[in-house]
Length: 115
Image 1 (tube, rainbow, N blue to C red):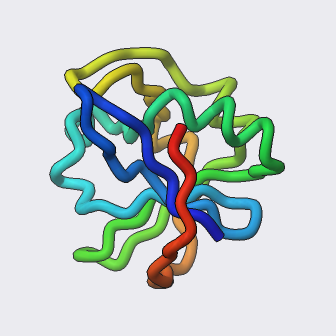
Image 2 (image 1 turned 90 degrees about the horizontal axis):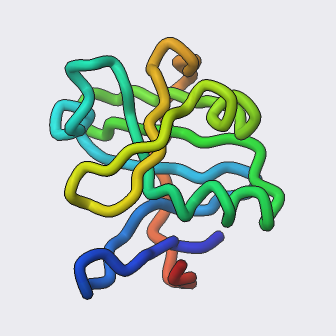
C-alpha cells in the first residue's frame, strides 16, 4: 500500500492511495469541479503509474455520503477525456462508466510515492 502524491504549482499534493490492484481517491464528491457534469477526475500522471504498477481499477469514494464508485483501468482509458482545470493535467471519467459498489473506509498509509 502506498500514498500517492504529485507536485502541483510547486507544492506536494496527495492524489490517491494504491491499495492492492486499485487506486482509491477519497473526497466529498460535491467538491469535485465537474460533479455537476457527471464526471470525476484524477491527475493524469496516475494513468502511467497505473499501467506500470499492475493497477486494474480506480475507485472514487465519498466518505461523507458513504459512496464508492469503481471503474476498470481499461474503461477509464477508453471512456475518459483529457483536460486541465487549475490543478494540472486531469483525466475525466464519466460517472456513467462507473459502477457503485459497497463503501469501505481505507486505512492510513505511511509509505509514499511522488509522481
